Image 1 (cartoon, helix red, strand yellow):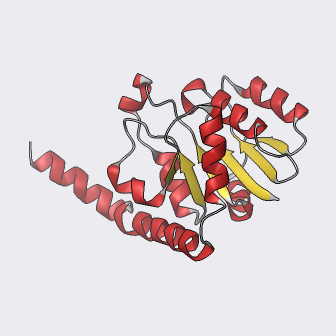
Image 2 (image 1 turned 90 degrees about the vertical axis):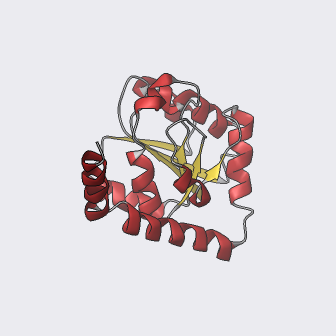
Length: 178
């Protein structure tokens, strides 16, 4: 089975409903889904996992458990609602962790998605569940060497551009410019 994973806050702005609706369109015999996190949509996730035996809700997990699940995953899901104003004030920290994990990522397009991340993600053109499901299927149709190169490049990008030294320097530069 292809293993999908979501880790993060279970809230409407994180597209939980759209993600679950998309997962329900995928063949249960071909996909396993691991969901980690907590939040206002937690009961919806628990109910969904009870009805879909290929879905496992892990709840809150330690960093060690999260890393182990990342290692097993074939594809990570990041479906944020693109038109929600919360995105205008969000920092995509989850995407940094996803990109660093060495696993392919499907993401929606949203206002705070850095342009520099786009080449490393598989961006679903719409958050309609059918479109998300189609994007997921299409990732697995990619040439395996190209897929591996993309995730390798994503990790290298994070190591080079999102380390403490680089981030600290950009903050200092920002402060000094004002």
